[in-house]
Length: 327
Ligand SMILES: N[C@@H](CCC[C@H](N)C(=O)O)C(=O)O
Image (cartoon, rainbow, N blue to C red; front, side):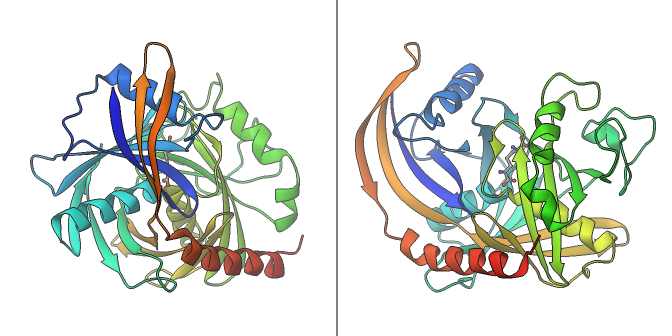
């Protein structure tokens, strides 16, 4: 089969976007998973953290399904949703749209460029749940708010939440990033284990100062990524709950791929988060795929020129991290 796609990124969390609205593709569930495993493989000419399937919705402006590089489907993807938001808004000539995702219809909108010539979109991260059964996390308690799970770590405290994909978050000192703790812990909870039957995205967060945090995430179904949008949103909420940041106020979230902004809303205990950041296209490609043989070849590859503008944002973000995070 021949497929046209766009490779893009949100905070350098990169995706292959496949448009099923304009193209008459028809994929079985197994084919979607196999496509993700094949095309996201970093050893090939494409490689990505996941695939975004952009589909028609019967009630919203469009629909997104996201598959991780290992072929598993996720209920949500914040960085990916910004790319889909851009794609749908440009296709339908809209500034605001609603995108159907696995568990919710989410508002998205075009925003003023965060940096010159960096296409910027805001996406809604919702619904939020602290019920452990929604992750799921198997513990003899209903919620976990900044508490220890001694079997995972004697030192670190964790908060667990679903936004709606599952996240385990720990606020740490800067020196912890130099240790191997996050990798070991993440591999454990994403392998066969008695706590997380579906795995979990694991984030370590450093509160640089009020209004500025750094987040590094080991993603379920992928491994360490440059950034994870839902994780940065969930982490922002956790810092507000711990009074390290303020609700209704911009939080700059630095990551290894750049920077986004989050605003956390508290509507009488119902939390939602605005995630604002880049939606950059890297190139358009056509590929010829032999799924049975597990191989593909590139037919065309045309670069966009947007990445140069993004690199300025990324350089400044990385410099800020280096200067402020001593540890
Ligand atoms: N990178 C994404 C999250 C993708 C899904 C995640 N790995 C999961 O399995 O829940 C983001 O930007 O939110």
